[in-house]
Image 1 (tube, helix red, strand yellow):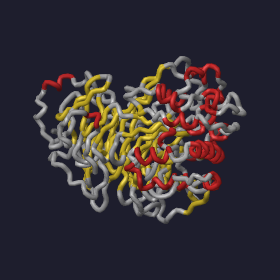
Image 2 (cartoon, rainbow, N blue to C red; image 1 turned 30 degrees about the horizontal axis):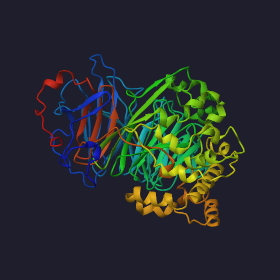
Image 3 (cartoon, rainbow, N blue to C red; image 1 turned 135 degrees about the vertical axis):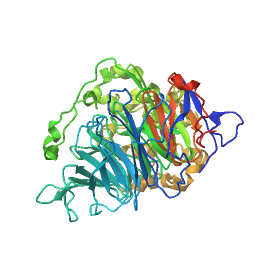
Image 4 (cartoon, rainbow, N blue to C red; image 1 turned 45 degrees about the horizontal axis):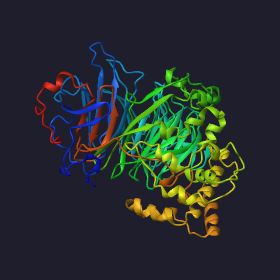
Length: 621
């Protein structure tokens, strides 16, 4: 683990110093040491070989106005407390519920927010041996155990979540790479389930359970290769983003069980995933130490962020700092009829939330006037990073947006920057209103990126490619369609390849210089400078997942904007495993079992006058 600090932190301070506050444009965020949650004895947990500490919140809407409840696991133990946040100091002597498990450890958990009341909450807990338990920590009743005999899956539960809008359906992923849909009302049966294929696609298949009476699991999803590390539902509950150890983000239409789009990490597995509040962007993080921003609309990478020095374990959007001001109400496209027949017998009860009206295919006219998405990430390097995703990254061609048609907005932003440069530098593009006409070259784009938010590309890129003239055909139309990425990858890959050929080995030298930590997979994207070899290699791109670098699935580092973190602070001694944004604060947790509350600017309140050292924890310096 690397504990070296970002240069941005400044000053010749000790490398191991833990930060207790940080400043952004909103003001100062302060660590509330008296609001720290942990095991009652406050002793740092010896985390070797144990599962990550995770935190879940629920609001039970009780009359006292203090309805927040927190659940967290540390080793074999599971705790359930009243969460007082920025209002009052934590009282660790009185957990509402505490459980110690033998032979297995809790790995993840999720509350059902629809059914939660002051008298009863439904909490799902996944375990290292593969079981899933449904408990009520207020009534202290153990309701049900699923996969009890481990006949459905014997591997560790990696993620468990209630299906949005449902009181009874939940989804569970395992390190086997499989996901299962359960209904709490149904049993799991006494024999191993037999499956039949419902739908198959590239690197995924969905199966139903063959049995005379309805039993769990209702569906089995086999996704990718290796462990399925995490999944997240879109805000309207219709789409599902999954990240796997094979390095792929796969986004599914959950009800229609169809693949919408994919993305590949720079290298290594992807560990975490989250959606923007409006469902238009997905951020993923993992073993390449990067955060990658993917556009749901265009099915492509639009930015990467580099600030962490080790694996990124959690990414999360801050709904309270993200601001989108609409010029017009967003259009709603798509209907539920398409997938009702598919899921109707699963008894799913949809929530009629305002989020379900969010458009997934935004028209040009309803483009936001002003938009900033704030998201955060924490990693095994013990650092917290905050990032702003701003208009210059999201809409680099904004001045021309009024003149484009709806379809051309999608097409013009689809190709990777390599293809864009060629089209721009060329004097004989065959499709005048395509990417070349509307898209500035990479160098002019990078000059508009704010210094605090992105690293500008070196000026050498465009000057080398301006000598290239080539004929680009309308190759972006194919690339921009929902899930049909295959042919688009080919065309974009060839365009990028030609660009690389034009610059000879300039990019290779730059990559070696900038990406020294990513050396082990560098050869993955290296292509010989003979054009015939290059084209032969690129024709294999479709079938060979190891050759995705430089394609639409995984653009090169210089082909997309590189974000810099707004702040990057070391905030713990052990690797960080939790980041949750709440209205008054943000919550982090590390593998030692300490859950920390950071008050937002102006939200410290009366507690700021209390003695901060009254409850020392050992994690704050």
